[in-house]
Length: 183
Image 1 (tube, rainbow, N blue to C red):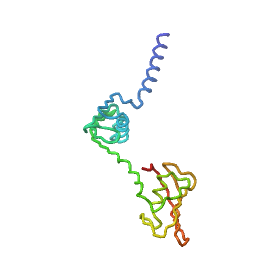
Image 2: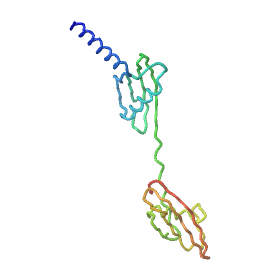
Image 3: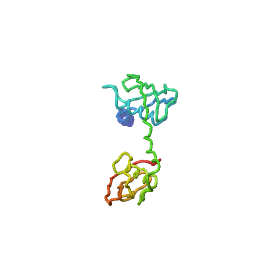
Image 4: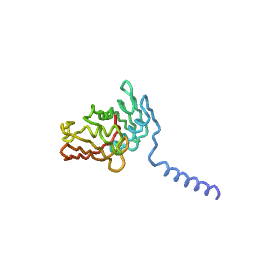
């Protein structure tokens, strides 16, 4: 009687263990050669997302740099992914991050020093250099340039206006925003 109950208990435990192991198998073979770990993880995610129909989960992956060097900014790799059904897929991939946009140049001397109200000096000069007509041209009868921040302006973000006052008392105002480091 005890032996029968013990066999029944072992059978039940075997069924539970079998049910638990039927889930998605983990990646058991992970090789990342000459490639930053973040890029290897990205390649694994791509292999999982692009699995052939019926292939199942990725159970092994080999990622090898095929360029002179592989960084997070640029590189080329060969990827070999093995899926739960035994299918192996080879693919190549390359990436190249665009360089950061250059900061605008600080303009040549302006016809006069601008009055900067709440705007960092480099950005103030850049905004003032636009000129009342755009394109960096200034009329001969220009009398003042005032660059005002609307709210809070920092070295990396801001919004405001530039007012150009001419000799006859008329003014022209240009609205602007910036987002990025000044040179």
